[in-house]
Structures are given as C-alpha cells and as structure tokens.
Amino acid sequence: MNLRIGNGYDIHRLVSDRPLILGGIHIPHELGLLGHSDADALTHAIMDAMLGALSLGDIGHYFPPTDPQWKGADSLQLLQQVNALILQKGWHIGNLDTVIVAERPKIKPHIQAMRDRLAETLNIAPDQIGIKATTNEKLDAVGREEGIAAYAVVLLICD
Ligand code: MG
Image (cartoon, rainbow, N blue to C red; front, side, top):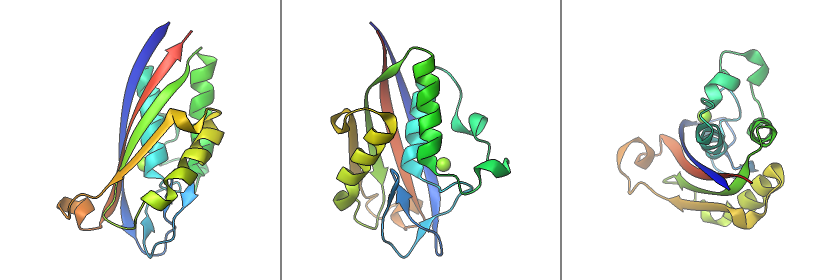
C-alpha cells in the first residue's frame, strides 16, 4: 500500500454583498467571501492538499482565476474534477482533516452539513472528513473579521 500526504491553505477576504459558502454549505452571515469562484476557502484548501499529495501543482494551475469559465464556479464541482484526476491516477482518499479559522460567524453548527456535502461530492464517508473550527483570538486580519482562512491535510492511498 502506497501512501501520500498533502497539505493545503487558503484565505479569502470577507466583503458585503457576497454569500458565505464553506464546504459547499451556505452559511447565513452579513458578509461573504470575495473571489473569482464562489470563494469556498475550505474546499479550495482541500483541493490544494489533494493535488499537493501527488505533486500535481495547485488549483490556480487547473482553474486559473483569469479564466472566465471559472467565474462564480461552484467549488464542489471543481473538487469533483480534482477527485476524478486523483482516482484516474489510481489514488483515493484515506482521510482528510481540516481547520477553518473564522472570528465570526459560528461555524460549528454547520460542520456536520459540510462533512456530509463534501463526503457526497468525494464519494467517501463523512467519518473520513474532519472539520474543526477556531477563531483567531481577534488577532491579525482573520481576527479583525477581514477574511476567513482554511487549512487541510489529506492522506491518499494507492492499493
Ligand atoms: Mg481560494
């Protein structure tokens, strides 16, 4: 059994007049994340971790923000494409673990829905997906509610 590990990080700016989408779930909040796609920082971090595990570069390479076809893109669809690439190369997800860093809103009530949604998208079980949430203790840009960041680690298996 071969194993590969990958890590990913993403941050998006919080602005008004945008939906807040994390892990494919719309979270009610007066601010949302700014980006070319739906700016789902959690899903972006997961994709980068998956690509990184196989040394396949990053999501900017596959879905460049300069390409109009990814404008407003549903990040879960991009995640599905990254997963297809990994499966095609003979690998699959063992587990993935993530952290969302957000001062507000409260993320915890939405974690189970995110796990279910991501599991469905990746065709794995929800218990293969860890999602944790923390604040930044009011420190730095995330602590000032200027953005939301996400970290992801993934273990890939090739049987
Ligand atoms: Mg991003």
